[in-house]
Length: 252
Image 1: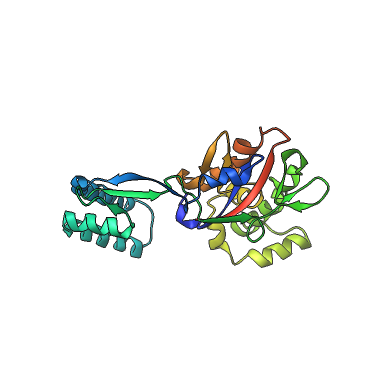
Image 2: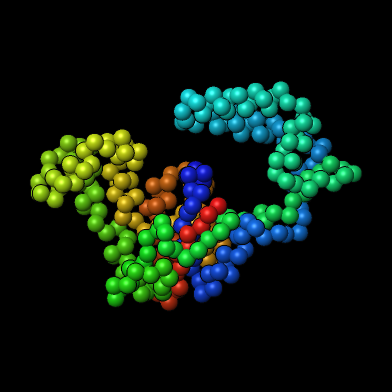
C-alpha cells in the first residue's frame, strides 16, 4: 500500500492510556542525535538511491511518472558524489560534523504522525450496543455485527449490476443502478467484487497500536484490500472484551 496515499489516516489504539502509546511515535519529538550518513559513503548512498528509482520503473505508473523517474536517474548519475551528498544533507536538515562530514539527526526515527485528534472529521465512529456513536469504547461495548462486514449484499448487487450487467430486481436496486451505472472506471479500481464489498463494509484502520504489538501500519502491505479484509481478525477479534479501543485521526 502506497503510504503517500494516506497523508491523513486512521489509527486504532488498543489500551487504557492511548495518548501515552501515541507519544512514542510523535514526529515532532527530538531525540538524542544519531548517525544517519557517513560522508565517506557518499558514492554508495547515491548508488542506492539510483537502484531504488530503477526498481520503481518496473512498477505500474503513468507515462509522465515514468519519465520523471528516468530524468531523476539521469540527474543522479550525472551529479558529483559530493554535490549529491551535500544536497541530501541540506534537504533533510541534518547536522554535519565539521571534522568528518558525517550527517546526524535528532528526528524521531519512530515518528509516524505530526498531529492527531480523537475521531470526528473523516472516520466512522464505533456504534455501541445501546446505539451510541463514539470514538472510544471497550471492545465488548461495541456492536461489531453492525460495523464490520454489515450490508455487504447491496454492495455486491451494485457490482453485479454495473460490472456483470445483472438486471435490477427492485425499485431500490434500480435507484442504486441509476446512481452508479456510469461509474464503471471507479469499480474497476477495486479489481474484484470481493474487494469492493470488503472496502465498503470491513472495519479497519491504516494503523494499529497497542502496548503488545507496537505500531503496525499498512505502508509495507502491497495488497491494500488484504489489509482491509484481515484487519479485524488480526488486531481486534482476539482482544479481551474489556480492552479500551480509541479511533484517532492522524496527519503524517
